[in-house]
Image (tube, rainbow, N blue to C red; front, side):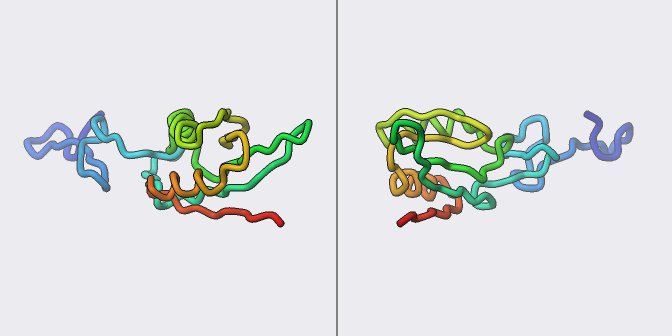
Length: 119
């Protein structure tokens, strides 16, 4: 990747606006357009969904699937909840009513959280 002032004595690599590292070294989460998307800039919508045979699933949606590693996040959530889960349609599913545990875990990771409380 050519840097700024390419071909001159002032040439330097293009750096990330957040971490100031060269772009080939930067590990900041980026969306499809290449913009940095931090966890605090994303809002996770948490709700319950009833599946076949009366099974309840906690559904987490609204996270950028490119900037957020959904498989890694699923692994952490399953571990903290002690439940199974899956990823479908860019949403994370955790078995059972795990709204509070999931919300607390996501908040501790820096995400904004909106919990849909059903009555």
